[in-house]
Length: 266
Image 1 (cartoon, rainbow, N blue to C red):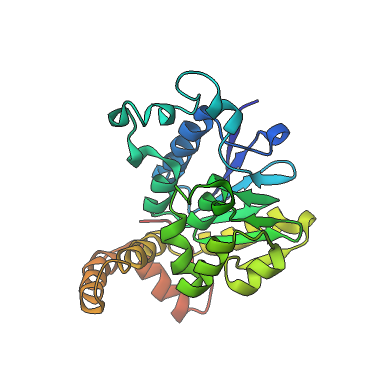
Image 2 (cartoon, helix red, strand yellow):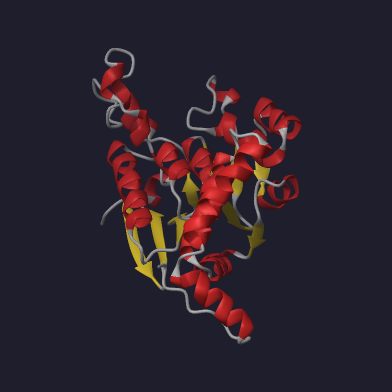
């Protein structure tokens, strides 16, 4: 079986980390596969939302340290060559960077614990839904490292600086309900309802005009580095082509006719 599963149904792509025997810790092959599958979903015009989840009792416990410590290059793709050959690793191909630059909305369905690299992947998704048994483990400082895959950028923007500082500096493990209260997670559900709930949320997103949703996500991402005036101008430039789409005409017609719209992504 592949360690990264991929499925598309009803406009929703589901990417599943599938190495439960080692708590879905990420090998070098998985790094490549995650990026490939994320890009595949983003380029598929039939896909309107992406769910990232895992099998077994953990979402992802981080990088596969056993592989990292064995062999001359560490066994994690080109990561093991960073000290001696940094030019061989293209950070733009790393899953957190790919994830951040997707226009397709993303939901992380946390079936269990998320730690290290796995936590950064979860934070990189637009929305997080957690099973009640899930745990958030930001224990980087307890291991003598720091969040290497976007956590220092993402967490303050999700929960605010002071909360992010306490979470990161203490490295305390957070249960799902506490993470919900802090704003790290959007929803907490029973474990046996996790995928059902996540798919229902993904379907609700997918029922909207996909070109508009993708444009909204691009503009929210752009707003992180733009002034208010710059973003308003940028949004206007994104609006003009949307006004010429079939989906815009369908949205107006559905509103006037008091019916659900049938968006086609064109």
